[in-house]
Image (cartoon, rainbow, N blue to C red; front, side, top):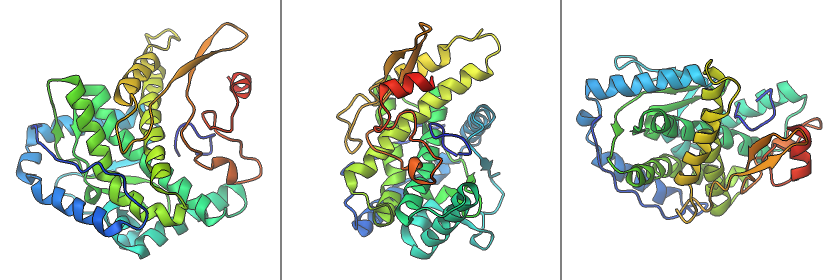
Length: 317
């Protein structure tokens, strides 16, 4: 379940990322780029025990903070999750159409069980991609926001469970850099590197072209940081009902996504709306619709959907 949708829902390492937008059908190019990056990764460096312990601690805290993140952390000696049990890595989803069909079938069954009917196939695909993309963004941006660490999350190290939508992650290493702008750039590059081949695989099923796909990534990266800020407020017993965590997360997301950071096509663009009781609320308008409203007759457009007017947002606040 992805927040923003109505409920039922180390050692420093360097990396060069080709940030050109992926064109639908350009799957072979994206996979080739992924292979090049994997070849350049020093796994011994990434597996440093001290770095791994720090990053694993970040992930445990992130999992405790974020109830929407259904995540199993794999121990170093634990075997990879098995496709026989319904687990498929991001790398396999990008390369194997049968794996992609399996996770889409699982998503369709979950939506049908919850809403009483199966949605149209491109709606199912959009909802599943939104779930995966938002989760990847939280897994990369969470340790950055909590501890200034940008994880190396390879698609081969993250698994999606077809029947439930749960995730399993094998933590590796992380990047730490002295400059805030450098670290933000590294974070964006890490998100792009992971999602580039996955977006290419989902382009056909979602009926989305490259700008719409990368727009979803932009939206989900802003949403993930924002959500984490709200969860920090919710768990801080000393906050006294303030929104200090959310305020800080909005500032962080705005700096991370200022606009012009292709292939991410837009900015966080947060703004405030004031309700009749005088309270100000953060909001933003997504670059594209996640199609939650299309899963069933009772579903409403999300609060940040382009379909939702400011008047309707104020009413819901």
